[in-house]
Length: 403
Picture (cartoon, rainbow, N blue to C red):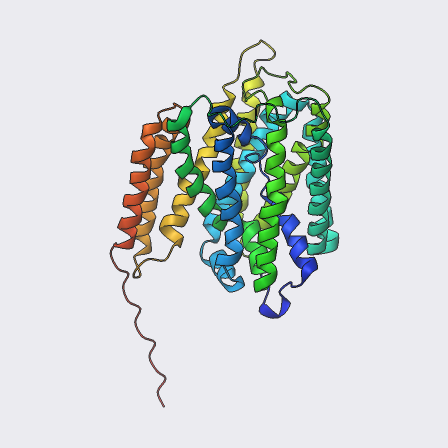
């Protein structure tokens, strides 16, 4: 948890640029680097717009909505939920590292992830926040160099068309509200975002978030559109390298390096004072081990040609960012009309998460777009229930000291 005070907040153009690269690269997940390939297939470029706009605007808005004081308050009050968010995020990335990268790029890609994590942690240890800025800038520069190289590579932008994809307009209309909800609310649980907002003064933070997502991050996801056609849409056979040269070299310098940086920054925030404790460390370790095992399991039978249900496994994690995680922000963090009992809000959140997740699975895995209506209805009813829920008991006034 950040301990910066108003007198020690970062300010000025250098801090704004440093945190902009830190934020933009920290948010370049296995969602932004891979999911647009599925979006283009299913919805065309209209789907990418529905993915990119709330993603960029929702994350950038956090720098304007929150003050440093409010960010520190969220870190204090919701530290457990924020830790869960980082644990899920790390597990998602480790699952992809164990399961996707060897199939796409070969086993050397896993080594690059490990080396990147180590380099980022060393940079932070020896140079503090400036080391984080430098590492982020170098990683972003490498990805942008690969972006430039990709523009000169045959096949760039293949499949980027405005024609509605295989799921048609009903699927697109179902995707739009899910994308908007997830990307508008999830940033408020991200420990790296809260760190940046808590440690920057008002205008510096706004510039950092605006540039970090409007420029740094948007360039990253636009890069994904360029190489999306090279991905096998997550249906592959164990130990088979799918990406052909020269695209394999481009992605080798992009995907594992970005994944390593994200893992490093979230690991540091989970270990920060105020967040770290024995229970969180144990849960993080268990999550990571389970994620690695889930990633390795499809390959246990060896090279027998059996296919991997990759897209469903990938969406298993992805749907958490469209249901349970934003539901927490919606139901537990947004202020209510009057103080409501926290226990009541917790039970409503748990019920909404349990109901909305299988409905979202029906929409985005089983391809029943109409289920988005009851899914949205569950969250809407839960929000109203929290807003008009039983009022919390008023705190007794503090007795005045006797004269």
